[in-house]
Length: 299
Image (cartoon, rainbow, N blue to C red; front, side, top):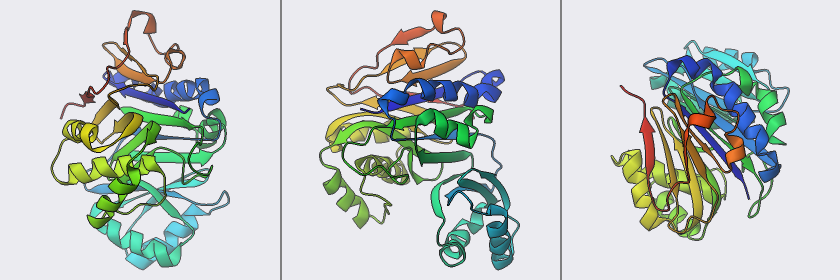
């Protein structure tokens, strides 16, 4: 049993409130997943630049690390530290160089996400406390997804916390379990995809990334997942411009959605949505089994 939340804003005036609203949504679902929590926020980004979210120890001196990396690469790197995570921003064409330099200059740091707009944070602990450590309530953006985890098939570790990201500006949260994840993982490894954990949810994220690398849209990748991924699942996914929801054909995992002229919201339970603006006048519904729900920002 895990908890999932997602919020996609249609009204730009709500963007400064994204983190505050998501904080409340995650906090309500603490009892669905007290082991660990995480969230991804799609905030401001600049063309030609990439943001890497790095995870380290609590006392990591991110400015010092960035200074060494900048000197080694001969490129200016901006940094912002948030508790155990740091956001490094640099030209997108130097991302591969940075990842290589990290292996020798900062091997204790882990890249948990990358993209032009996405920042991704996760940690072991009660969800409301995890959100507080990272200052989620002060973050802004157009959309975000979050997860509260109750571990059932793997250890309680930060690596095992959601969201999982296997591609630029792509991430996924999952409630359920996949029965064929080992077979799917083997196929994806042969295609060159890399995995950091043995978690079945990371396989789901990798599957969608692989399909999109081959030219599929997020909607098409989710459609393909219905025939290629076996098990019980509710997925909420985010990309640079979009927000999608999919439940398996049996749809045994709880899910509820709300939509107004200003936003679309997802929660494992309705109580995660009750503090959203004008929720009393929202259209409320339970997502249908094996049905793709998708919203995208205008270009």
